[in-house]
Image (tube, rainbow, N blue to C red; front, side):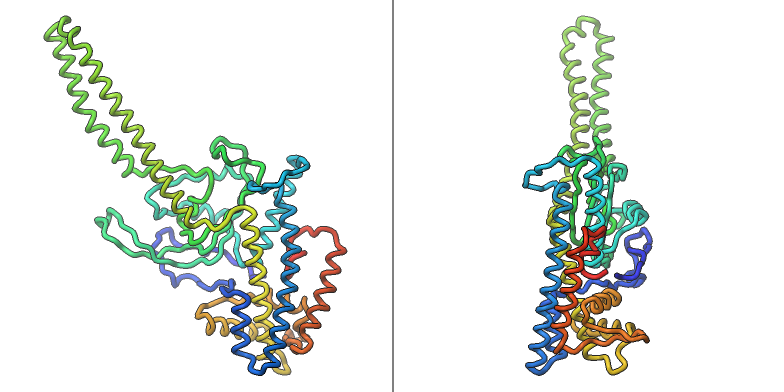
Length: 437
C-alpha cells in the first residue's frame, strides 16, 4: 500500500494559509475503470488485433476483481449485519456484549482495509484534536466531547484548498475571498458509550458509518455526535443587552410606584395593588422572553448546521460499505491495468525499474486528466505479480508478459489463489481476502 505519511500535514491555525506549503498530490486516480481503459487503448494500441487482445484482458481483469469484490462483500455484510442501525431483517439469535465487541473490532479492521484500498487515510487523535480547535467558518462555536465515543475512526481523502466567501464585522462586513483546507471525502465510523449527552435516537450497541463530501477541515466537529452549540460573545451580547436596557425602565417604574406608596399611604397602596402586580409580571415576562430568545438562537444555528450536513451527506451505515467497496475495486483495477500497459509499452529487454514505471504512469495521468496523481507504485506491482501479469528479475526490473498469453496467465494464477483461499478458514483481516496483500 501507500507509504506511511502524516495526514494531513501540520498547518497554521489561521485559515488563510499558503496552498503551496503542502504536496497536493493524491494517490487516488479520479477515473472510472472503463474510462481509463478507453484512454489507454486509444493512446497505445493501433491495430484491431491489439485492441481486441487488450479488451479481452480488461474483461478478464474486471471479472477477477468483481468476484473478489463479492467475496469481500459477503464477509463485510456478515460481520456488520448485527451492528447495522438500519437493518431490516430480524436477527434470529441474540448476541452477547462480548460477541458484539468482537464484531465491532472486526468491522473496524475490515473498514480500515477497504478504505486504504480506496486511498483514504486515517486521521490520528492528534489530528482530530487540532482540527476541533480551529475556528470554524460557521457563525457558531461548538464543544466536542470525545468521552461519548467507545470507538471512533475518521478517514479522509482529497485534502485540498478551496475558495470560500465570507463577511466579518472586523472588515465592516465587506465580502472577502479566502482559501481554506477541506476534505473532498470524509468517512466517520464510531460506536458510542452509554451517555445522557447523546440523542435518544442513537444507541450504544451498534456501529454508525457516515460518509460526507467537501468538508472544511475547521468544520470537522460539526459531524460528531454529542457536539454542543456554544453562542459567541456577540450573540450573547445581542440577547443580554436588550434584556438589561429593556428591563431598566420597568425597574424604574416599580421604584416610582413604591415611592408613591410611602407618600400617599396605605389606602393608595390598596388601590394600586394590581398595578404593582402588573409591573412585576411584565418584568418577569421580559426576562422569560430573553431566556427563550437564547434557545431560539441556538436552534437557529443547529438548524443551519443540519441543513448544511443534509447537502453534504453521501451515505450512511451499510451504504457506506457498499460505496467504499466499489471505490476500492475501481482503484485496484485502474492501478493494475495502468501498471501493466506502462510495462508493456515502455519496458525494453532490460525491463523497467520501479522508479521508471512510477514516472511513466504519473506522466500518462498528468497528460490524460491534467492532474498530479501520486501513482501507488508498490500496490500496483504487488497486484501484477500476484496475478501473474508481470515478472521481476534479480535487479528489480519489471516486465509485462505478452498480451497474447496474459488472459490465460491471469485466469490460471487467480484460480489457484481463489481455490487456496476457499480452503482456508475465515481470515483475520479483510485484506487477506480482498485485492492485494
